[in-house]
Length: 210
Length: 180
Image 1 (cartoon, rainbow over the protein chains, first blue to last red):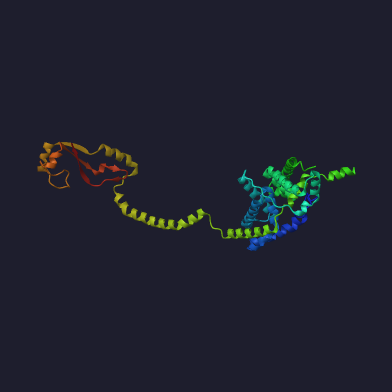
Image 2: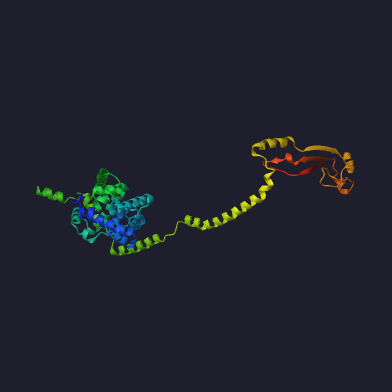
């Protein structure tokens, strides 16, 4: 990945994804296209958490995210016969997820219900939380829930287009080129959106940033 | 210098905060429910019914075919039975207006006849409805006295002058109008 230096946890190691992962996915897709419907479950198991993560961070609602993730896979399943393998399966399914979520967000309009996932215990013990706790001189448990709320709130203040780029890059760890392919824009547009979105987030979260 | 570097390293960036979002993960129980629901929904898509409008179309298509067949047969029968009646009396469409004008010009002629004149008709008319006059004589019966007409207007017409669209009235008749 282009940003592998800055992203500590890479979802798909760069070379492995461009060759092995893509070939593996394509082989599974061909099985499904040949009538082995059960093979689709392997793709679900592989991508469900990433798709859910993108949608959850786009919507800030775990129930909506669950429904939309299921619908994303159903859409993919219904359209898999038309998938020709020109792009990788992962960019294809991410594109379905992003487009489906964008449509959902347009319909949802002003109605916003927030429901969060629990933050992993390990993360609350991480170095960054130690630093934040020291800086804010607050109790760790309270800080975790407060920061979670502020982060989700800040993301929701971004436009869906900017939000999606930030999520795909900073949370999912995708390259600019991959995001450009998913969102059907240029890498320049991706960089521009990312830069603007980070500036916005910085101003929203300035209480937590050094 | 070292202190500056340490301070810089300890700075919290936006990227650091966003990375914390990765820790918001659903539990295993969530994924079990997710998988079960997804399988159910995928099975539903495999056996999904057509949309309501397609079902309605399918439902009525059989009836439409039956009705169309019956209707076509009825229409064919009607054409075969009714058409011959119009064959000789149908005016050419291009001359329709001309026929209408002729019909107006040669409208039934009204002849006023005095009651005294009608008394002489007895000798002329015979009780036969096929002829062009009302037969019979006027008597002083109660009914007649009460509604005794001053005169008869006797009009005769010929069917050929009554042209309506393409159809013409057949036969010859006699029109009688009572004028009070």
